[in-house]
Length: 196
Image (cartoon, rainbow, N blue to C red; front, side, top):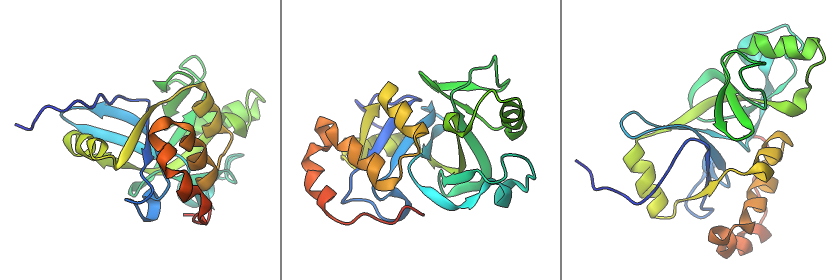
C-alpha cells in the first residue's frame, strides 16, 4: 500500500502546469479535474488548448452545433466529447456539477435543442475531445513535486473558461496565484501557438 499523502484533490480543482516540466499538450496547460476517486483514479480535461477542428469532424453532426470549435481535452479517448457548460439538471438531464457554476455532460443533442429554442448561445458551453487519466497516487506525487499547482476553481476561473481564453492568456492569468508567481519570467517568452 502506498504512502498517505497530504494532497487534498477533488473534482472541480484546477491543475496548473509548471512551465519548465511539461511539453506538448501539457505545456502551459490548465486541467480541470472532473472526477476524483482514490481507487479508480483521476480524470481531468485540459481546458485551454483550442484545436483546429470543429464538432462536425468528430461527431458527424449536421446540426446547429456543427461549426462549434473543439478543444483538446486530453490524449485518451479523443472520440469522446465532453461538454462543459453552465446548466444544471433542470436544463440538461445528465448534467453533473463539477464545481460551482460549471457542469459536465455528454449529450450533444440536448444542447442543440437549447440553441434552437434561443435559450442559450455558445458563451455557455465548450466542447472537449478526450481527457487525461491519472492514477490518484501518481498525480498526488506530481503535485507534491510541484509539477502541477492545485488551484480551487472560483467564479473568475469559471468565467475565464467560458470566455474562450486561449493557451497563453489563460495560463498567464494563473500567474496571479502566489504558487505561480515565481514563473512570471516565463511569461516574457513566446508562447506556443493557440492550436494544439
